[in-house]
Length: 304
Image 1 (cartoon, rainbow, N blue to C red):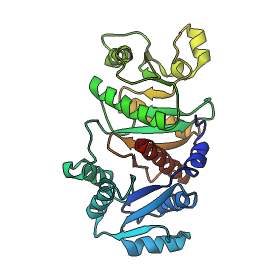
Image 2: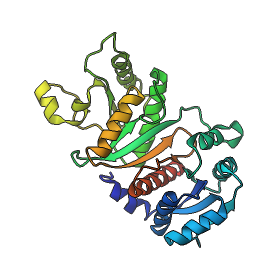
Image 3: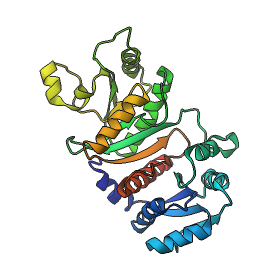
Image 4: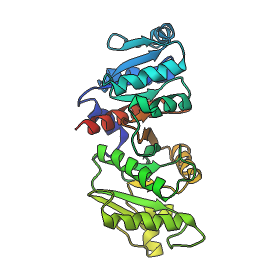
């Protein structure tokens, strides 16, 4: 099992090199991360966008384009469509957003004729390596789905489980977060959490998965808090996945991880036929590099 995101770089670089299609690749920060991932033999890049701008940036940052394929596109829509087609045709293994807007790329992904849609909801999964925690911690969904209903949460969880399995986590322990541990008719998060936990008994999540909730954040990650509150659960204090009830909780926990806990991180969009690397311009270089490595591992896992 991978204990830190640095381990992910080492493992991804020693396995099969995945082909990465980047939509609107004329972005310096993105190309820096792609360049490093290529040097580490994690990916072989296909760069869609304004080729002259891509070459100019590559020259400025010292990027070797000899192993990359460059495809000229007139605008962001064409770049997104080209990158998506590269994946659907088998020429590339996964996607990354470059300079184009998120909505443009996802619109191209969700077109029926593109062949990347599945029957599952798209959702965002963050992987954190907090200094104060003993292993990687996955968080979902703090980036896409605003107020998911019970069925949405099941699909969000299935997406996160796919990430956890690609990371070699066995068993996967899931904490369905809420503000309290008891079901309260006035708090929908507690009701859904209990139903998600109960669904485990029907085997819908597959083998080696333990789901519990409702559970407050402190009980999900702290054995000491569990001891003080006399709370017992095989997930408590040892969660691998934090499933949040809404985007506000997910966004808040995620930002606290990054800015208060100095946690290294990687982010991915799941639910399509291939993983989609989608990072913020504010994300650090390492976050982008980790995210590419994560996408590579998931894409490889899908092929096995």
